[in-house]
Length: 221
Image (cartoon, rainbow, N blue to C red):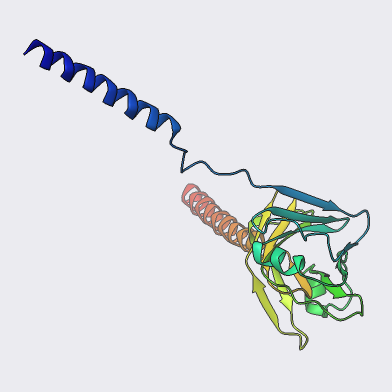
């Protein structure tokens, strides 16, 4: 019997040791490989994307192109598309301007800019996926950054709202097509608040004046 107990003990120790070794050598399934990051910079408004620039880059990587007027970050689909180009394409991000705005848009303080991606023959190269656009923007006095919006301008002048937010001094939005865009500032909310505040102050002033006159009348009677 003692031999059986001893054998059982040794067997248990061996099983536990083997289990520990197996656990030690099992790879961590939840460990994530670090995402490679690539940043391409240009000192002017254009950046030429060569036919082999993104050829060896994993589509899961983070790729950003920075120009003097802003930056774009490419989605995996956009990277996959640009990896396969056979000739150079040029990304151009124009600066903010008030040209080509309607009088109503100009009165609102809107700004226009354009982003193009063109082949060497001058034709537009369609985006193969979404990109995130970041534009440096200095809010005006009393401007509400959370209300700033970007609208895509179609060839027929139709405006389409783009989901927009303000982040670290930049207007940020996503798009799957380049064209002209309009930045619409947000002063209306402050104007509404000022009007409401002015109305309340006026009512309070009228109320105080009425009470004062009634008190004066009571004193003299």
